Image (tube, rainbow, N blue to C red):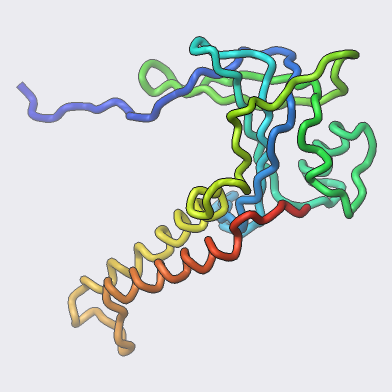
Length: 218
């Protein structure tokens, strides 16, 4: 009997809404800061944000579905953010638009459910294909227990979490070099693991203090 055992992914695939039209309220616009994106082997650091839509449909546990849309934080006419805001407003957005004026607005969303993979490796993704005006008399309320990102503790805000993840990715190669043989070390004195950890902790603390309660800006 083989000693090797294959393991299924421990990724939890949350229930997703089926493809169709839904009314939804824009519950939050979350700034996640500068995020590395790789396209065709080239990695760029880009400012990103995401919308949180809460649908008028519920999952099997009675909770309203939430959909996130992620965008580059760019209001150029060719950007996806510009195109989405134009659909929401039914007109071209101004360059000085205040994101807070969009919170709480109800719109009709066309959502497409995409399924990738098979069996235990199957994953489902929801994509907002389009946004239009809500039907007359329809309004979706933001649930009373929903907490906007900017009102969470600084350490729990999305911008802090994304920054921590990126800093950990950046520090991993440097940490590995500390343990390399002395013969392979460069002329410069490498930082110790403790020094790297201290720098990372200081950067995280400074970012958390700076971003707590910050509003999103397009």
